[in-house]
Length: 198
Image 1 (cartoon, rainbow, N blue to C red):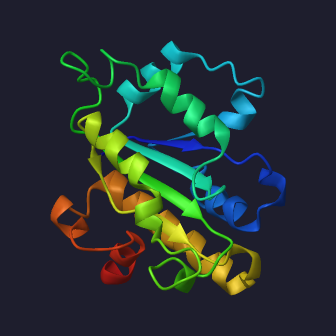
Image 2: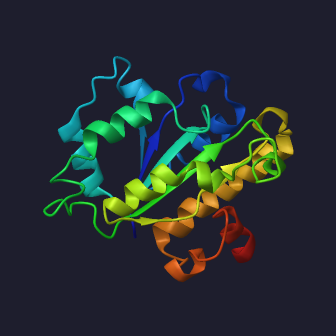
């Protein structure tokens, strides 16, 4: 069984229907550690050694956050800048994260069709997530396709329930290794893994 670390960041969590639903669907699951960064570090003084210890103890690292200006909330960048140190996460001797899986879980206010070359945002979600992809790769991790929920402001209760169920199933699949790395090739979003295994 793989151990999953969810690095969650939402500066206005109390206002987010979708992220509340996603987190509630997995917060009591065995093998999952929920690390709420804004709750843990309201002053942004990140305990680097404690965070590195958490990374070492887990097999799957998840950056879970809403899209803020086509990226992540500020504390995620601060966490990456401080915790993914040279000699620990990358560099000739920085092999602590080698072989671990990493992925992004993001919610967007915009609909999926605006995240493409012909859409108003001009780029895909995966293109916007390139810094996460490259950071994970630099750290010798295997970066998986993202889990994405679009149109978060207009989701119905049925939509919330479906996305939460899909997120729960995904975490089970990753934890119990019922999906293999070959399943992740040539897919845009990891959400489709759930549909294939439904």
